[in-house]
Length: 147
Image (cartoon, rainbow, N blue to C red):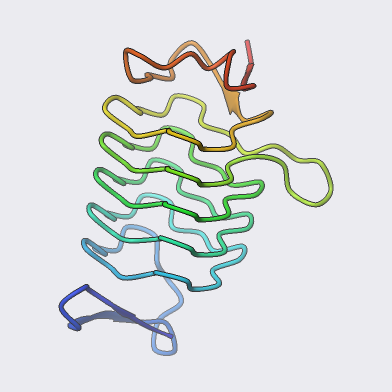
């Protein structure tokens, strides 16, 4: 699979390398892609667009996802632990349980300035290190605090 930026420039060819950890994928265009069980831990995804993508079991551990778009994306069972999600847009995203009942997690994630309007976050796990927008109530959204 060719991973391109929004301007069409190829940033990575997964047929050549399967090693994505630590990759620079700023402004990558993942719109409507099926990226099930993909590990993008420790990658730079600043301003990447995941709108409408199927991100089942996606791992974004410690990734820089500042200003990413996750509008209408399905993040079932996704791991967003310790990710920089400042200013990310999750409008109408599903960040909840997978098909076998495993919840998505945002342990230690930084969501300051994120848009969580109409996002489904039921059961999504967070902890005391997780930082939310000042006007957001994780309990009201159905999220579950761990520890």
